[in-house]
Image (tube, rainbow, N blue to C red):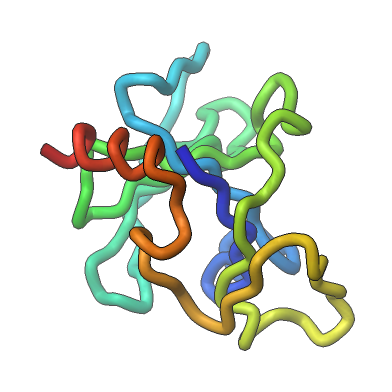
Length: 133
């Protein structure tokens, strides 16, 4: 539905990288193979998230935020078979990005977050509404 390039300090800490690419998609559309483990972690909002990892290698495959648990998945784009199919739609929490990371002016930049209805396409908003119903 939508892809975030998130520069928040929590994503940096959790991934050990300068940012993370998360593709937001309906939970029932996510398929994976192999055993996984789930790890509950706090979030700055206080609502928490569950990170699903490959049991064998420990790579984070996707997250589920407690507020929408079971309805949406935030899939780590780098774990996809073809990550080139999911370029970011936005760059978020750029106020906490690493100083040495350049931002593409071709991708909307937000110092913090944004309002979904001002940024997402109507098709994606419709899918989101159905997923959260």
